[in-house]
Image (cartoon, rainbow, N blue to C red; front, side, top):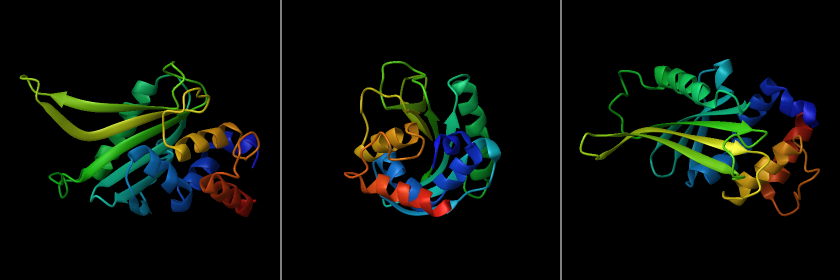
Length: 189
């Protein structure tokens, strides 16, 4: 794969929708084991859109997107609205195991500080400041990070994407995940 693959959003999103290509990244971000990954409804704006079922009984509706640094807040709201419309039907509205997560992969550091990962949690507080979790979260992944504040597979993935989807410029020898990604890329050629 060359740098053009990263910039071909459709190809990258299809590649990342494959369970074996996305599982280590998600397990590193969510800090839990995933037992099953299935495709979710296709919406171009949502990029790679999957449902992930975790060992602890949660079901995540996940959108993984390549993102420019501008208007991330608005893009997050749009993505979340599309996901909510599809995922929160009247039949499962009361299901406390449902979660949704938007993941933006950014080339440059949109929030500053050099961190590899920023987690954005949305919560609602009651008038007496009791926390209320609405089941949504978001991650901003920084391909040009200087602080590796995430699981090794997450940081390896960011280095790999930053290198244009090749192990060139990052050491795949120590990472089974990068070896898997390299193998998958060579198979689609």
